[in-house]
Length: 405
Image 1 (tube, rainbow, N blue to C red):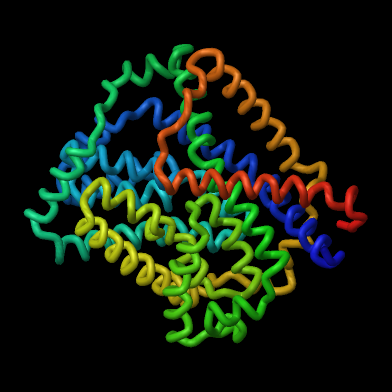
Image 2: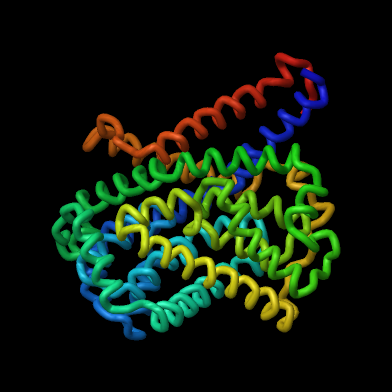
């Protein structure tokens, strides 16, 4: 292979590993907080507060989503459970949107890779997503349509666990923290494939894809001052780009950093970040849970909500003079990743915590005897394995091929 290709391969690998190193402590902190809350607050307790489409139920659904898991597939399963047990459609969808856009760990990772404006945009956009979804469902969904979907969800519903002991007792007990450790490890097991593929793809794009590609895909990104039509087109392209990444919100953050570096508009980047619930694997799972009609309905609602919210954020931030400065010239590939700084010590701390939790889970409950995941998960597993191989080979190229970093 040409030497230039090998050098670029090594650069892509270094970028992927560097991006993950920067985000490791953020993942650990977010999943620790998320695991604690999931252990001490069950779905049944949430469901009892989400029985209609009133403001209180929607606010509670959004709050429960905020303190829940950021894994799209786990959020889908929890949403199905809530809806099947009697929660209203709007509070259930509010929970789903909040659980993938409001969560603590997502905001932390966005802050690491982008800027405070994107963190504010993520949370403010989450409010807009829920508000637009609420209005569209209220105007368009019939009671019969919703109840048919609920019956379908109940036919797919698995048995749920009983409520745990009072959280005040549980948080003081060894069993409570064993559950936290178990949940923490399960969170990582649910997202490691998305994260591995996401960070690997981000490095590959940063190293191999020329700026001209982004200027073609995101119309108007080269101008620095896109027109309304160009902003609209970029907000529409965002979900398309997310569709082809095939990964969830956490894995998409480093890709969003690459888009930011290539002058994609604020609306385009936010639409990309909001799009983890409109990709095909999610659509397929929604169809299994609720039937194809409801799955298509939810998909259209989410597309309308994310495009509308992204454009509103773009012009709202422009009016407030909050738009982030251009990142052009600040190449992701040129960053200094590994240094003796706060990232090193935070990562070491969470590596120790993770090691303790993994050991505890291995000794008490093990890791199961295999998975019966569908074709989507098997494909993602294969992609994650290929990504690991890519990273391993790319890391050792300077020693075996005489390339330079």
